Structures are given as structure tokens and as C-alpha cells.
Image (cartoon, rainbow, N blue to C red; front, side, top):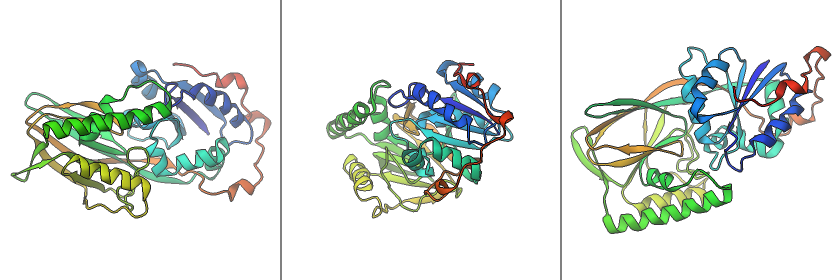
Length: 333
């Protein structure tokens, strides 16, 4: 099996370098016969992904939700996409949490990846397209986890991209209070038109997975591979904040009202901010049409979820399949 590891060296606590060294343990007792480790470079990410991924048997994305989104969005240019796996290194890790890769990594580390490779069970992961069309422009974005217009977009915009994970999580709270008080003073809401009807909301949220904002569960039956996305409308900041807190404290009890959709179209009449998979994207201009639709599915390697396989004895590969340590030196290619 020929694999490539895309590691974001700046994700989370910047553990990418340590991870690259730890991956040497996959040289033995692993189905991997060849591996390439690449530190992602934001300015050259498209070249890295498109030039190195097409012939691989598996792509392992090591980073947070933003890294996963960026790489998968580029992979959609391929007619046939190799299966992907995830090593969570980010702040929120919602995609890894929803797909089971976060728990697998926390419980088993590299061993969990090894046994997932050994089993090679594949499921689907939905990719959604968000088209933004203005008076003089149109652009497509893709999301795996969620896309939000309103409060969460503004909160993401406030968070700096540097600092340890514990500091970032604290800053989300600070940013949330800032947006909260600003909303009390201004009281401005998103004005949208749906089927000719004018409606005002504080937050519009599309969710493809059952984890939001670093582990809040807004809807317990959400699935990442059913071709359906959940659509939530929040009237004000109190309603939005209450849902996020309740979804974190009582995740098995949360069941907000939502619409299950395969596509959705609406017009935004005023200026608002967009976030996709927890990353700030841009201000949306007034008089913009938004269309959300299911785009395609990609193959996802299913993670190890229990310790049953850990009781099995690993199979030592033949001598010619053992990788020389020099072949896994990380590079920015």
C-alpha cells in the first residue's frame, strides 16, 4: 500500500514534527509498503495535493478541520479519489470526532491507524458545495462539517491563527461575548428571502456531521454519509448560545428542530460573515444568492473503534517491504 501523509505543521499545538517522527513506527508491522510525508505549505498546497495524490492508495490528512477541508476540496478535482484517513491535530477536530478518528487516535494512537489499515473497511463521506453568486461574481466552496452565516462566522473571524490549543479555546469564549454584546447594541440580523418570503435570522447553519464548534451535538441523528444536510435557523444570539452549550453538556439529549435537505437556495439581502468547517471565509455582500447542494462522496477509511483487533498479533511483513527510515524524511514538495 502506497500512502501519503499530509501534515499541517501549524495545526493545534504544532505537533506535526513529532508526528512525523512517530510515523517511523509504521515501517514495521504495517500494510504500508511505501509512504511519503509532506509538510503542507499554504501557498503551494494545491500543487502539493494535485501532484502527489493521484497515484496513492491512501491519503492520510494530519491536521484540523480547516486542513481537512482544504485538502479534500482540492481532491474533488480528481475523477477518482483515493480513500482518506485522518489524524486529528486541530483545535476543534469536529470532522475527526464525527467520523470516529478522534477517539481512535486518543485511544490507540499509531496502533489504531495500523489496524484500520489492516482491516481496510471503507465508508463514504459526503461533500457539499456552497455556491455564492453576486451581481458580478460567482464562486464555489466545499464543506464536509458545516457552513454558517452570522454569529459563528464572526466568532471565527475574531480568533487568531496562532497560539496553543487551550488559549485558542479560551479566545473563542472571549470572541463569543464580544459578538454577543455587539448584537445586543446593534441587533442586526441576516435578512434573507426564501421562496419570495422575507425572513430575519441571527444565524443560519448547515451541518453535515453530528459535531459542531469543537464537540457540541446539535442533532443526534446527523450522519456524514446519508446525502442529507441539517439546516438550522437561530433567531438570536441567546438561542444560538443555548443550543451550543446544551449540545456540549447534554449531547445525547439535544434534538433541535431542523430541516433535512438535499439542496437549498436563498438570497441574502444584507452583509454577513461566512465560516466553513470552522474557518473564517469572507463577508457576504448584500444581494447575494446562496445555493447549497450535495456534490459527491469520497471514500473514507473506517477507524478502529474498540480494542478487539489489538488482541491480534500483527503480521511481520517480508524483509523487502520494510521501509528504510531515510525514505520518510518529511519534505515540502
